[in-house]
Image (tube, rainbow, N blue to C red):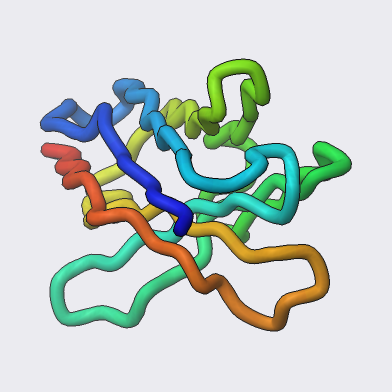
Length: 118
């Protein structure tokens, strides 16, 4: 069973930076796609970024150019470096994982709150 644990959320002023961490356990880490999603109050869950097992990266339009996803296979961890934060980035951020070829993300973390003040 895959377990994902996020950390690194917090309160930051607009224009600031945060780095989120997702530690994975229970399955070979460098197998499948790891991703970040977010959900703001009253809004649908939104794709933020993903990195696959060939280290190809993908970004949602609202964060492209400001956020960077990376992975450390030795530590079974992925990161989301968030720069130039805006109040509209305020949300609960979730780490997720899907197996190769799978149509959807099966494994989810509990989420970490990011709040950006104006």
